[in-house]
Image 1 (cartoon, one colour):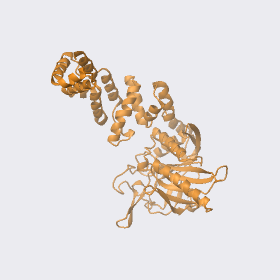
Image 2: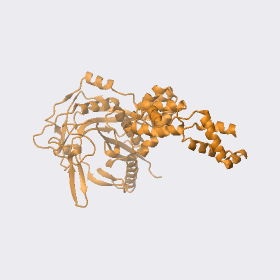
Image 3: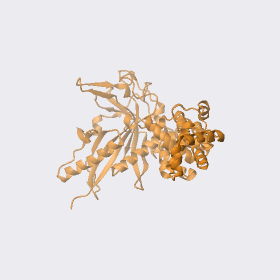
Image 4: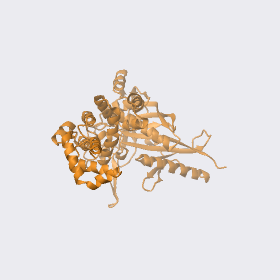
Amino acid sequence: MSKQYETVIGLEVHIELATKTKIFCGCSTEFGGAPNVHTCPVCTGMPGSLPVLNKQVVDHALAIGLATNCHITRVCKFDRKNYFYPDNPQNYQISQLYLPIARDGWVEIETGGVKKKVRIHEMHMEEDAGKLVHDEWDDTSLVDYNRSGVPLVEIVSEPDMRSAEEVIAYLEKLRHIVQYLGASDCKLQEGSMRADVNLSVREIGSDAFGTRTEMKNLNSFKAITHAIEGERERQIELLEEGKQVVQETRRWDDNKESSHAMRSKEDAKDYRYFPEPDLVPVMIDDEWIARVKAREPEFRTAKLARYQKEYGISQVDAEILTESRNMAELFEAATALCKKPKKVANWLMVETMRLMKEHDMEPQDLRFSPENLAGLIEMTDKGTVNSSVAKEVFEHVFLENVDPQAYVKEHGLATVNDEDALRKTLEEVIAANPQAVADYKGGKEKALGALVGQTMKAMKGKANPGRINELLREML
């Protein structure tokens, strides 16, 4: 009988914090920009330059630590992690080893209806390195220091996950917590959230851990899933052949869907850590913790339960609406104004989602006001505009945040409710379409739709299709 194996997974998640300036200097953290424009003597490691800690970084890190049930280190310090790499300008990275800001936390995940706690070993603050750009044409490597000194937190989990599904649930949970706090946008594709996967396999029933490998360069949930499945199979194959798994760092190649060894794994002692002499310890008191705790928003888990209870919205709809804090806030504010939660939800989940996809936008990029969405819903309900005009107006609300009432008035889009004008148009349509009239009288219900369409066209879409339908049946 073949052996049964269990996968054991722990993650190191790097999250880029949403500060306007870097962790130890005043340079911009903006993504993009020409190479080496967001730099100064501090973040390019010039001799004699001194770091000054950005307080906003500690605020964000504290908020994440508290929201993930961690113990906060009241006196935390920075350390130097020494290694030599071209994108690391000082030849060391300022990080935290001995006294990280937070330890011993947990988050709850749910997969297949089963809840489980994933423990967090520790979370520390550190600076990001620069970026190497490899030019294959010239066979050279260039360094861009724009990212050097961008503030990060690294969240190290315990090896509590057993499948790719659990890993994705854990990352989703972290992403929602951090986004709701406004501490990072967590965009994997832009590198503001990055995960390294530590994975080993062992026989089911065994308590001993197998030899683990670490996989880097994972910038999408799809890549993470494939990397986990691929590495599990690779390790099992080695063990089945009686070979050893080597402890090493491997790089995932998304195009080839395979990983290759980068280097054998170093121990912490190879980094020659020592306390950072240029930075004083950070003292965190009760008052600071209370201030950060008071700013905590209602998180997604609480919103999911409340939306179903308070607004009578299904679990699936609530999940879509709470996927981002911006979307949830739009929904709540528009609902408070028009008192029609299901209609607000419908506009957000159908038209808003369609336009976001069309314009390649994220929920945090939405700029229209809840007042304008609520106003459009009111106008549609009163019959001031019909549904097709409402969609046309909403496109302008979505893109330019126009006032729907002013827009409808200015462009003469209000529904024509003048019965005489409507009857006059219908008489003309009936006279111009004898075949459709004959078909309808002969029992072909579809012919009525054609006549409604002709009438709407004649009235430039500004009539109520329901009323046209009623009048047509009466007149025929």
